[in-house]
Each structure stands twice: as C-alpha cells, then as structure tokens.
Image (tube, rainbow, N blue to C red; front, side, top):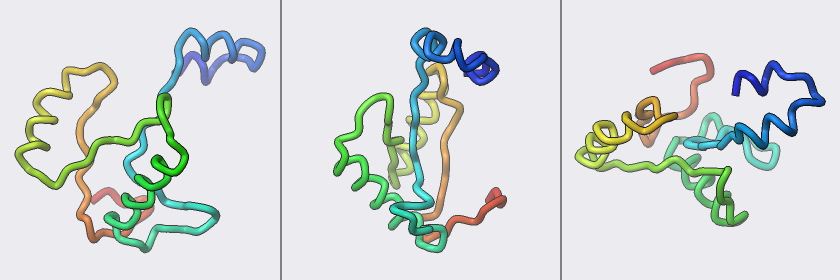
Length: 104
C-alpha cells in the first residue's frame, strides 16, 4: 500500500493491479451528507450493515465482523492475530457516540 501511495499517477493502475487493497469497515460516521457522530454506535453499526445490504457490497468492500459475545471475541483475538493484515480488535460500547481525536 505504501508503494502505491508514493507512486506517480502513471504507475498507479499497474500497482493497484499488482497489490490490490481491501476496505474493511467497522463504523460509519456520515451517510448521505448527514453526520452520525452523536448517534450511539449500535445505531451507526445498523446503518453500516444496511448500507452493505442495500448495495450488495462484496470484496474489496468488507464489513468487519462484530459480536457482543465475550467468548467469541476472545476466540477471534486468539485466532485472527495470526492472519496477515489483522492487527487486533476494536472495542466500543454500544451506547457510545463517536468522539473525534479521542481514544477511549
């Protein structure tokens, strides 16, 4: 990905074909020009899931898996950290609003 970012515009299509990128979404902050920052994560996640459903999005678009089951989350953390490109998990309270520039 870094090579693609540093490439000249004329090289970008070839590099994109050689090193394709995927987009993994776990939250949505704006939809149809409407800011969603003050909505709870549970509502934002439902909107994101609906967006994937409405547009039948598939690779390279990926909806990040989500669970409220602690045992399942622990299993994911133990097994998915060995997968290339997976760096960890995101934990968010279902009732939390999005706080820009804040890591909670």
